[in-house]
Length: 286
Image (cartoon, rainbow, N blue to C red; front, side, top):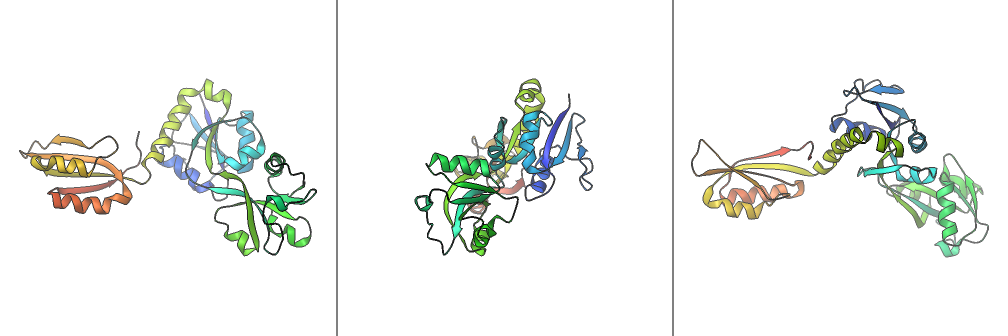
């Protein structure tokens, strides 16, 4: 049973998507020379590379069983897919922006019949209608920021991560239409017919996501200090403790902890009396 995964062929989410699959154990056989279709190290899984904007449609139509793309593109396409996971990268916002010198500072300043330029006409029109605003939507395929300055539009609706590009182009954000991030999506029929394999892929990816920002801390400690160590490093479900067979009275302890806590934790454990402390990266947590 073949599973086809659609990935963006280029752009800011392409490489992170490929790396995510690799970390999940679904690496491409020839990552250095990407083709339209690429085999993975699992004979039942192949990857197709295409435009990120086309992925929702391909998944909905069954041309691909799974896909990785942005929520903004999923919502804009207005197709029905199963959203399986938020992949915790590619966060951005679809915002409304007007020129810095404009008198349009909020939704209430957008007048009837105003022109809005965007690459996301469906999302923009739906949002503005929900706010009771009737405007003219002009669809552009790029260079949206220039539209107000050449008389094409009064307002733009554009994707931004930090707002820096908008500021550089002398635009101010007046409202947010949608907060987006990268999603793992599935064809609805495939999700039922090929559920076991899809869930296996999902589990691998989920394991990578759960491991982000985590470290495995391991140490040896005298049994009399065990309670202090337990209080210092509770881990996800409490630390794991076992006897060190070659050294009576010494216990081996390990736990998964947040990376940001490691520096202070290690120093605290040393003061308690722990020794042979190891801090190990984690690839996946299943």
